[in-house]
Length: 460
Image 1 (cartoon, helix red, strand yellow):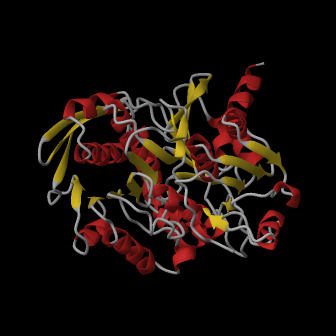
Image 2 (cartoon, helix red, strand yellow):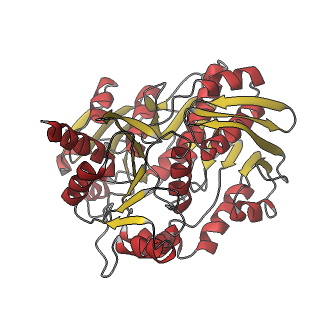
Image 3 (cartoon, one colour):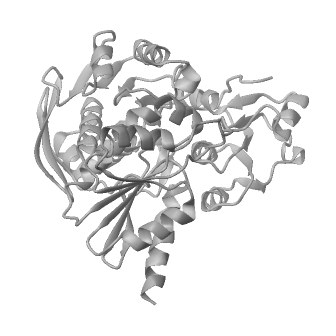
């Protein structure tokens, strides 16, 4: 029995395959807090699994048919195939085998849910909104793809009626969630390997808006979202003069931004993190909070103390006067926005180090990074982080490199596919006053530590 839904209003026992991932780990933490009996397996141990153990979750390292005991259902992440030995055991035993989507759908029925979707900005917007609701004393629950720095986790099940869900569009799993408020931060080309083309992705967002049992909140500062606003009934937010809630930026620095949004009321806000993209995220979260009954002063207080999300313009220390920042940016507009945010700082030079993510994504949109790096002083493109995919002939980081080089031949641009080459190059080239900005959704996140170590060794 595959992909049935489950009644989570009664106590269940559940086994989760791939429990160490951010998405399934969040599900596990919520289910355990609700009082369900939870076990799970993953191929390697991690700090996330230690946290789950503290919640009473039984953890198995490695996949084995013996891990699947007599449970009410088994859940798995999208990375777990039908051929996984634990999936096969569940099917053999007649145990319902659920996708993360179906479990999340069942959870969404238990509270008044707010689903936050969009090509990018979901995690930050979800985190900001959750913080606003907590600050108002509403005791919201939330399931988010990243760890909220003020709270230390991306998953909480609390007493309040509201549940904030980061709704993933990558495989259309955001459809079918029961919700009273839908948020769409923006819309651009991504996940085309799943949808087969942009129009199919676009139609999924149309359906996401149409099936909402309540209000849709839509950011309209990109051409696709503006088009979407003409096809679905939505309250709009943005710098766009047509927005129902219009953003006006009053101050922007390396340390944050000040701005106001005007709609039913005027909200005067500030955030302690840089970037116009974060102003947009915060504005949508603020309007979402306002729609949920939070007073403007509380919204302002909550956002002014927002400490960010792991891997979103995350400061990773310094060495020899060189500052390191890491960001999850892996789409063209995300990379461009992250570099623009960095430009508000007083750096000698900005070194942008980008790791393309997945062969399918690079093949479909790699050439659209043309303008993403134009404001950096030096750019390094690495080879692709596979993300579980099989390499494709002719698909490499050179697709991004060649597209940028063709339009900006004078840009100081380097293609360094080998990790050791990247580290050695940065150790040799970085100097006092520079910013080293690593970007990508893969293991590029560990590069700052390697470069800092190399810089430290170079002083010896």
